[in-house]
Image (cartoon, rainbow, N blue to C red; front, side):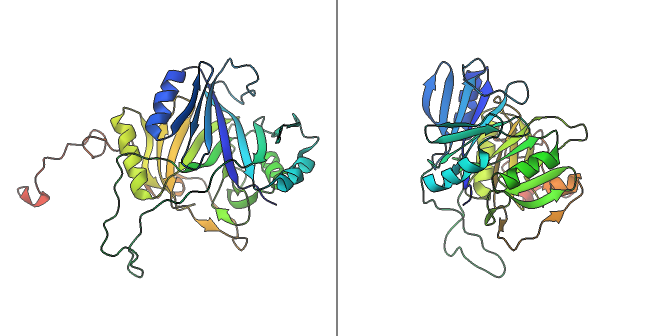
Amino acid sequence: MNIQGIDEITFGATDLAACRRFFQDWGLTLISEAPEALVFESLNGCRVIVAHSDTPGLPTGIEPDPTLREVVWGVDSPETLAHFRARLNGQPGFVDDAGRIACIDPNGLALRIQVSRKRPIEIESAKTNTWSARHRINQASPAYDRATPVEVGHVVLFVHDLAEVTRFYEEKLGFVLSDRYPGRGSFLRCAPEGGHHDLFLLQPPEPRKGLNHVAFAVRDLHEVVGGGLHMSRCGWDTELGPGRHPISSAMFWYFVSPAGALVEYYTDEDELTGDWQPRDFTPGPTVFAEWAVKGGIDGKTRRQVNAEAPSGRFMTDKPKG
C-alpha cells in the first residue's frame, strides 16, 4: 500500500493576478476563479491552487508568503486510505474529514492524503534515436510552442531537521530513499518502483524551513525547451536552465514564480525499483547540474540571454577570422 504521487498543491500569495498570468503561461488550465482563490489543473487533473494569504482556513505556512501551504498526496483506493489513516492517527494536526486525512509533518507543512482524483491519460512523447536503438523512423522530433505540464512531479523543501523529517516520510508514509547528501539532503520516492524522487528534503548549512521549488513533469526534452522559450517570451525570469541534473538524469529549466520560490519543467528522470541502492553525494555545482545555462535562453532570439541575435545567414557564410 503506497502513495502514488502528488494530487494537489496549495500556495498562499497576495498577488493573485500575477499568479493567474504565470500559471496560465506555464501551461495549466484555469478551472475556477474567485477573489480568494485560483484553481488550475494539469493534463492529468493534478490541481494547483493559489489562495489569497488572508483566506480563512488556509493552512499555516512554514515561511512568509508567497509559499507552499499544503501538499495533497494521492492513493489508489479507500482501503489504502484507511491504511494511512491508521498510521497517521495521533500525529500533530490529524484530521479525518470527508474522505481526506490530514496532519502536519515535522517541518510544519500541512499534508493531506486522498483517493487520487487524477485521470489516466495517453499522450505522445518524442522517440529518441541513439547509436544502438533507432526508435524514430521517417519521423521528425516534435517542437513545442509552449508546454502543457502532465502533473506536479515533486516538491523540494528546506527543512530544519533532515533526519526527523526523513524518518517521518519513510516510517509514516512509506517513502523510499533514492539518493542522499549525507546530513544535508534526502531524495525520496513514494514507492519502491517509480521516478527518482517525489520529495527532496534539503537542510541548508543554517537550517531553516521553506520552499525551494515545485517541479512539473512534461513529455520530453523538446517540451522543456519549448515551454521555457514561451515563458521567456512572456517576460518571466529564468533562475537556471535549461540544463541536466546528473543525480536524477532529468533535464530541467527553472523559473521564478510569483506564487513563491521557483517552479521547474523537467523530464527524463531515472526510473527506479526496489533493487536500487541509494548513493551518497557531496554537494557541489557539478553534482547539481552536469551543465546549465545561466539566465536562460531568450524566447525571441533563441540564443542565450544577452547573446547576439542570429543574423539569418548560414554559419558557413561568416568570413574567416
